[in-house]
Length: 339
Image (cartoon, rainbow, N blue to C red; front, side, top):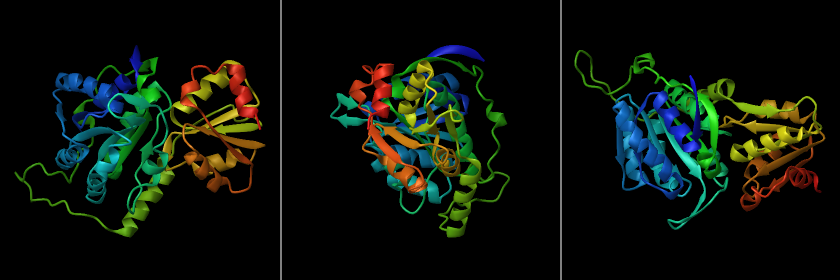
């Protein structure tokens, strides 16, 4: 273990390599080009494979082949590009092939203008065909490293694609974090008895689509029971509760901690799916008001309303990315309590 000053992009890449990822295929999008450049430099150092693809459809198709041979596979795109991966992602899901897909949230206008946002919540959490995928959402640079390992573990354990949902603020944010410096030995990764690795000394294997609804329901139930993750702060003493995710949760955590504000608690879901429904519900019932803050027009807010119904008042506040750096602690608290 050692302490390093890392950006979110660097922590994500180092976390993937530590977890045993040796295959990375991606088309280059403005939101994730720095991360892709960094992993392209690092892959040869671990005898890994990096292949730039002409588009997202090609990238996810290459992931299918690499995953079928048993490798830990990573790809990355933006909210604008993930739509092109939908066919490939559904193939991964129904063929039960593990893969980790990084999606960086940001509005891309041409190749030069990128605006931080959290506009992908609904699409990533709910926007698939007749299934749901595990979604992990880091809130700080440390999470970018350690959650990447969790993403690969979940993908292998349940044989399912996992979405690693981040945003522009986190990818460029830098923090001093303590990380593992020795790579996870590939020999410690549990062998997979379904891989297509050649028929020497064994019978042929076939990977075919699994459309078993009962098996899908069982998978969702197991994910809900075992893979919910969240962070909370100042829950016991507070009268009000802020619910946020991603970089916004990190910003609010720092502000509340600096202000030593005891009236307000914070709840951040780390797993957007499966969402920590029961935990949020129990905490919210002890509060006077729930305040949902995010960088979109209320996508998480809609889900919090569904979870709580009319049990507790829930209000929404949109955080303007252009004014984040200008917010002073007093101004931010006034922003929270206004109205």
